[in-house]
Image (cartoon, rainbow, N blue to C red; front, side):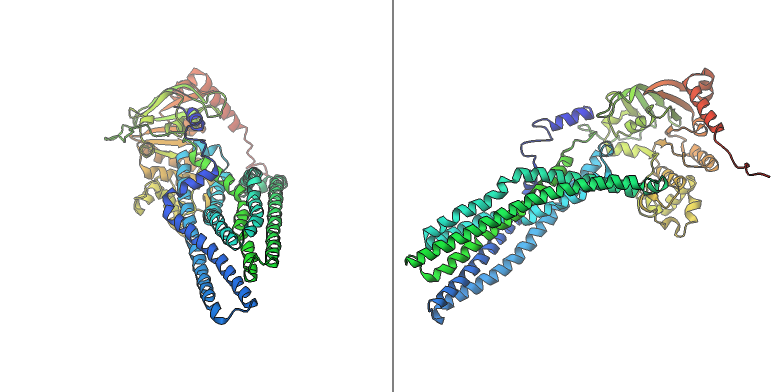
Length: 609
């Protein structure tokens, strides 16, 4: 099944994508299934905390009423002891609820981060190429972090907001039924305000998270491309675009804040109305002799505190639009189908794989793209042979390498290594068969030794150094202040392009795989370094199948055979001399390259005398 078909199936009703329970709320609840014990403790401690708070306030009010009506010290001993117990219970449960609720929340967030990283690894690189890195980083960090609100401050609070007010209503009704009746409509109104505005909150939360993700992506672009912005004097234009994104975010925040303010004002008004109604009803009942005056302050206190858990959940609900929108973004990424998946029953080869590459009738189009990038491409690379793919930009050279490494699956045809269809190999086993030097080199912010060693984590220091020597990297590494322990800097910014390429080549050589893929691997090297490295690679390529993507004539000529691509098709194949003699596409490419080289201005002697 192609990547496009997989994605369509995943989003179809009943597929692996959207379902009736795929909203952020239900997904957040579903994650709790492995933490029922901790969630139960959170709910119990939360209910006891809120209940003890109301009980302590009610007992204190009762004692005030008793004193006002002439109660003796002996009559106050029992309620005083109960008040002391309620205060201690409240303090203990407040601590326990805070501890357990946050312990639960942080455990779940850690699990979600692990699952999200696993999803990114599963989706890379095909899906991630279509997303901005800043937006992905926002989903990985900020969006997941908002889940802390839900797990630590919402679920337990919500259950308490249902149970505790019911108990308070029972207590009010026990004193006089009119007190509960007077308070009931206001309690329902306070609880109903967040429900009435939930759709608007959800829309505003989704817009807010989207605008925040776009702004984060712009900031990351600016930080990573700061050198280019300064070099080309583009700072003002970039800052103007950044300001536009920032203003859009501010408008979303203002709309969200205005709705939250209206919600809070309505809740406060209904709470005040409820308390005033109880005060009025209690005064009437006391004047009629139907309510003991000692219970009047208790009724007023219960009316105040019955709104505390309801107001708490209403306050939390103001942020649920952002929480659920963030959860939607996170779980959408978790549900996203991988561009490629291991075939059922795929197993690693039991014996050593012959270093032979075969493309047979390969056709491929990028998801969401227009015309196919490759059309009926066929060629082979024998053991020990080096084949160079050449052609204009966009001809399909890098696409061939990407399909070989199974970043995507071909729409038609087959690609095999040593007679094994790459789609029938586990992805981990396939990647172990291939050492890749990409055109865009990424070095991690760790030592040069560890950047090379990531190709084979168990390699010794001596093996790392041997690979660096073969890649012509040992000399410049040794000249650095800390040698192999020198930190490369984020993305290797402290090194030149040629140095980064040699580190990447050393990494590939250390991997020692039967297949070697070089994607413009020497494009940043000068002529002398390129010649030395080609000599080293000539030894390394012995016995391996090597696929070279190159534009430099010197690199192309070092290949045993050349495959020429044009508009995604193989149009010529042969040695350098054979293809030149034919006078067709390859000959025109070389002629254009040679002419361009001759027209490069050389002012080394223009200031003579």
